Length: 198
Image 1 (spheres, rainbow, N blue to C red):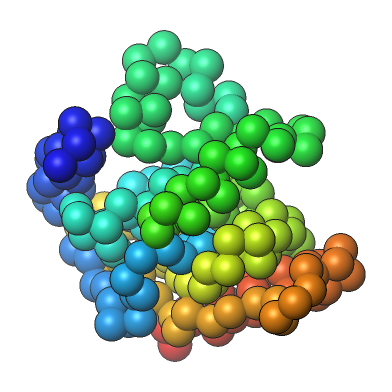
Image 2: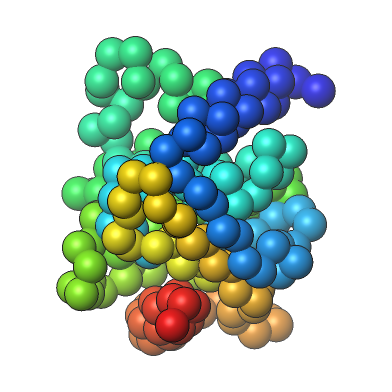
């Protein structure tokens, strides 16, 4: 086991214990998680979402989360999230480096996670999804795994994490075009929203 994975396992155990004091986690759909590569896509409403997303996969199945580059400029935090395997992306540009790094993780059989909305979206509001997740899934030949994270979070309450069924995008012998990716990205957000418990 690499030093990076050992560090992640220890950080995961500490975070799960710490947040377990304040929240109760109900994870549904764990049987839908594929072994190996997957493009994990979830809604985003709170700064805690990346941490809670990781809890759904366990300490042995890390998801490399794509996060805004601004986080990597904060002393201390930058060191930590790099050690945890987070991927920096410049949301104001076509960040080729972030896409290459994400693609490499997927091709190596690892999971990459992204919040397609691109920023935190409050409850009862919506935002258009970016097409980066669909592009990566298409290029890597990895399944898309939709996930819903409860938007309203209250201390000492239950937090529901719902994992949907994985599905593939694209077709054999051709790459998706921009129109395809836009349509599939909108469908992806519909799939995520549909996971919200009644």
